[in-house]
Length: 246
Ligand code: NDP
Image (cartoon, rainbow, N blue to C red; front, side, top):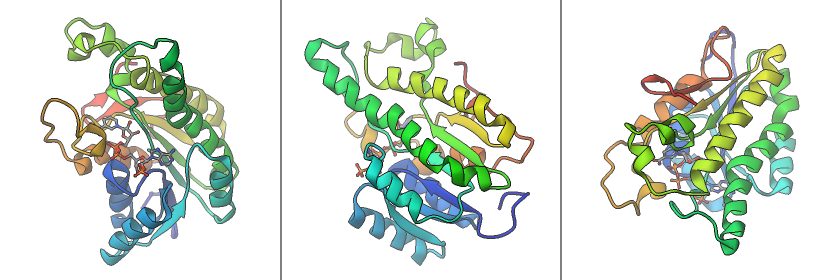
């Protein structure tokens, strides 16, 4: 439970029917929060929420496609309280390749989910978050969004193939995080970006190297930022080890 909240502290996690988002939902429910489990697919969301309820959590499914304003508005209309928003839903697009003219729609699709989706969900839910005594927003970013990683010759990311999709979208998400933090500081809303680290999920299953880190391990930094004390940081980028360079 957040230190400055009493009961029914409520969190919404987008893209929480599986992977890291599901583990974030599980961990927040285990801390006693009411969790709204966002899923673009009704059945997958209901199944995931039922699993977490069976484990004792107060978890309810919410149909929410971050690229579809109608579902975001419908989800918002069902809520009376929101204290924590975890913008977790994300897609990768092709993991390398700079765009030819034909790749532009792919870049647009990735931005639609990873950047515009966060803007849409956050803006729609802001009136509710502003009413919370201590709201937190966590944007699930990636170390791949760090310009510093890609320009540091000693960092493995500088050796990865160039990509116009995923890393660019996460860099944009980082900037969006900073802009929201600036705007919402006066409302006491803490806004941070999290890098969960490479975790074994459907997202990474086609990568040509093994990943042993679990989704639950990746979720830990997101949960920490979602339950920061009121004097916690805002406008920052963290992984398990501490600050991530922008
Ligand atoms: P998964 O592919 O396992 O899960 C992604 C989730 O996002 C799914 O629930 C998926 O729903 C949902 N989603 C995708 N598009 C939309 C949409 N338009 N509206 C609503 N939900 C959507 O990925 P991860 O759990 O691994 O990734 C979660 C987040 O973590 C992403 O933002 C990713 O960029 C980030 N991340 C992941 C890393 C990793 O190594 N796994 C490393 C760094 C960051 P559906 O089941 O319907 O497809």
